[in-house]
Image (cartoon, rainbow, N blue to C red; front, top):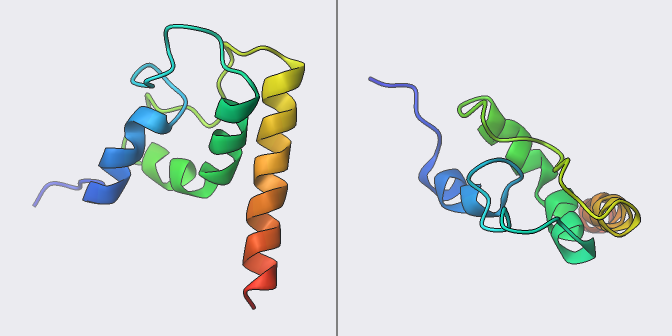
Length: 84
């Protein structure tokens, strides 16, 4: 049997940083960074199956993307810690 990523992660690939991203036409901004921060754990798992996927988008608008990325990670941690 072929080692394949779960179907729901394959469906999320278009939102993950990398060459298959649906945002590839222009540099990433705040909201894309926020999304990438929130889905970082899923992106990390999917990257084990598809090395072309990146954890962080290098074609970004610097401060806006970075701020969104960090706030997305903080929001994810906050959501996880408040659910326990």
